[in-house]
Image 1 (cartoon, rainbow, N blue to C red):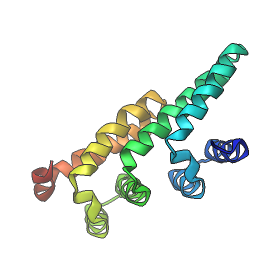
Image 2: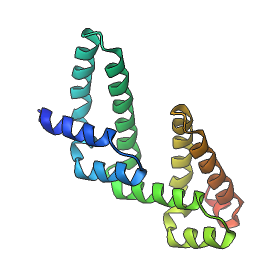
Image 3: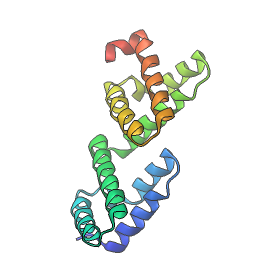
Length: 156
């Protein structure tokens, strides 16, 4: 059985994040968020909120539940790798020169993994659905740049 206070503290911390780094820090500080048992807890909370007529809370917690399930699937138990991949893709999205991009590619070998494309392909529609169109477009540009590299085209 999950500790209700710990769950509420973790969810509160999660909803307060402003950056991906903050997001992953919260996940590391509150491993309860990645516990599959949280799904049942959230299901019960959603049922109660629905019976109370609180549609806004239902929608918020359903979205949070889906996001946490997706994170668990993406992480496959290795949160640090997912965090590294997210940071590397973000860094690559913000470069202003080919030389900078190549330096980031060298500094983050994870970008040369087929998982990079899977990750990018998964998060782009999620970003678009969340209204983060500019961020999604940056990730599309990163993927296009990666595919333009001869060594990367073979990976995909």
